[in-house]
Every structure is written in structure tokens, then in C-alpha cells.
Image (cartoon, rainbow, N blue to C red):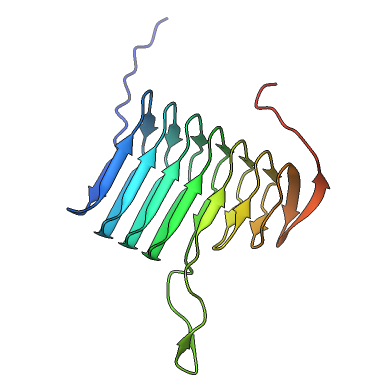
Length: 183
């Protein structure tokens, strides 16, 4: 018996007038939502990118998200660059599993004695990084090339290159590692 089932997967994309999206070759995106709101914001995808059921949000002014060539971002992931002059950079050949959350901002300002104490900060994920299921990466973090972040971890501090970090908050448990995406 042969089944001929056609699925139509739609993406919802909303970009303000001064927003910019750049897409490389062999880009595949299905079931995703993209919201770009504010002035002079940009979203850039390299070549050979795969996204499925991902929510990408840029809210503010002069903010950017860049996803390097050969990267894959899994279902239920949320990637957000918010506020002013903020960048979120994902390197080349990165693999993100399901439900990964990456946020440059806490989403709302907090003040002490009239001074803001929780400014938004850039995030950099270097090349060849593997992020497992349900990982949260918070503002101001750099994850070094060749690193792995374990399931259910929350990254609040930098992770050096070629390291494994796990836990909440994530801590480095192994260094000088390599990983492969082939089984």
C-alpha cells in the first residue's frame, strides 16, 4: 500500500520596514516563527542551515542574530536578541537539539536605587558547538569552539573551547575534548 501524504509547513515571518533578513544557499526552514521589531535589526543565515519549529525574535534597535553555515537548530528552540545594539552570534557547524533557549535579555528592566541592574548583553557561540536538549543560554555568555553543553543545563558563564559543561548553573566537567555529529 502506498501513501501519498503532502504536508504543507508554513513559516510566520514579520519584519519591520528597516529590518533585514539575509539567507544563504540550501536554507531549509519549516514551522518557524520570526519576529523582527524595531529599527535597523538584522537576521543573517549562512549556507546549509536547517531550522524546524524555531521561534526567532529580535526586538529593539540595531540588534542582530547571525547563524553560521552548516548549523542545525532543533524543534521548540527560542532565540532572542533584545534591547539596543545587541548581537547574538551562532558559529558554523553548530548543532542545537530540541528546546534550546538563548536570550540576550531578561525581558524586562530591573532597577535598584533608580539604576538599571540587568542590562542586555551579547552572546557568542563559536564554531562546532553542540547544545543538548532543554539547555538555556543567558546573556553575556561566550561558548568556545568545539564545546558541548549537556542536557537541561543553564549557561550563565563563559565556557572555554573544547569543553563539556553540564548542570544548573553549567560547570565545566571535561576539557580538551572533541565531538562528532556522525554515529
